[in-house]
Image (cartoon, rainbow, N blue to C red):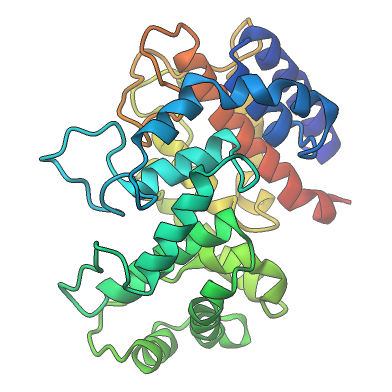
Length: 337
């Protein structure tokens, strides 16, 4: 099963199986909105939206959100505070993952207000500044969340343009050069150290239409190849897939899959991985990580609100894998055709 049309058919079949498996309103909303891609005003979404908005998974986000639109510190977990959400960035990513938009109440609107204040240094929480890379790194983190909530926000124009200049310098004529990237970062950020801020591919791809011709392909060939060979964060790399799907490290492969899958033409490295994933479904037609599901939020599944829910592990596993395959289809359909 290598053709995109075959993958689409198997994807649709699996999504329908998951929809029938779990009748929890938040899960079904996610399936319709994000996996089947129904538009926001689709009658099926409008019918289920009241139950979705009153679900415990949405209500808890609202009840735990602070008066300034945050959920504790932006990125560094405060271990002295007993909070449901370890960081604000985790909570916002959860909002986006379960399908919340700016049209759904005040949760993301208030979060945007916090992000804007934090970006401009107006919030109570300030940037960490322990080394010269800290501030540009955090500013890119904030902008990536802002762009995820409200694409092409003018708040992020300067930050995006800085990183675009750095990327175009680093990949001049399609070949990566550490020396060129270092010169560009030192010029833009006023830094001096040899250690660089990791190039913000994910932020740049939020506005992929603005990337110069061939830049995304060069980034895929450079970063994608590295992750394919070595893995992302861990050495669980797509080049060496595990023999057994159900194991306590399986989720680590998804970090590598998803990193490569940011880019168009990701099938260059991921075609075998996608085929392998479909072969790993069990007799029910779904995937199952196994028994290593963990909390808290943001680390091991965004739908594990209540540990008593029997659907937790299966839903978390299938939503993550199907989201990956959906993006794979989107990023490779044009090329395949």
